[in-house]
Image 1 (cartoon, rainbow, N blue to C red):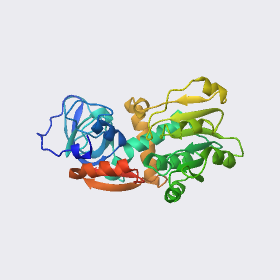
Image 2: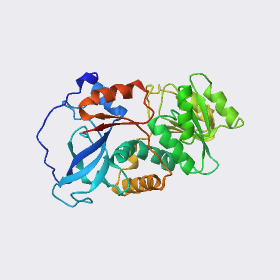
Image 3: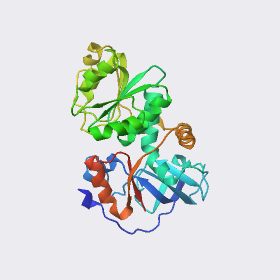
Image 4: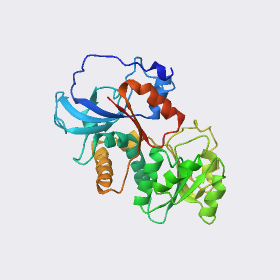
Length: 313
């Protein structure tokens, strides 16, 4: 249902089973997939305890070996049930936090930060001399994408939906910005690249930008379609990729890029190192008490937030 379908309730404190930890939750990241879960667009068995991202302190461990200890400050991405004062989390998904990383910052980073990391380091590993097109560059993932692309030495062209969002994208590292509500972003990309195009398009928007995005690529360029905030891309003939220059198309998901604990820790460690050194910054757009989760969902759905929304239990 709508945001009003979110109801705060009191339940017994869960007991961690083998391979699980009970974490007292300090902060929860709010993500668009939770709106899909709430509305039934991505159905889950009812009742649903929403939330796949958070940070807090380990209170209790279930049976078995664990890479974390009671009292550790941790963050995680994945699973369900983070919209709570206490949550059960698989121990192999818990990332210990460096002393300098605040729990709210960690909760804001885990899904969006790890997503930006795999996109810029694995889906298409950016390198000096590359130019990338980042759609929704002023959004939560977009700002992190711009920053990580600059850390890789790439040039960044960012699209935004309003003039007010352009300075936000530039502050995150975009060298050029395009208001796609007022400008033809294909033509502007051609102008910015001397008619050449970009090596990679990072597209989390989907239906509204996908087809035009293919026009922005150099031969053998990469279209990385990692989301669909405007709706899913319609089926199309793969011959289009051949006709436009032997293009590559990837539809990735974060979970395949943190499948093992080693890969999760490698990405998180590098990301937290950038935060500690001041080379990466996370924008927290708004915080809400847990009891106001419905208001957090309304703000997220409005697309007016330029940064991460958190719930504080």
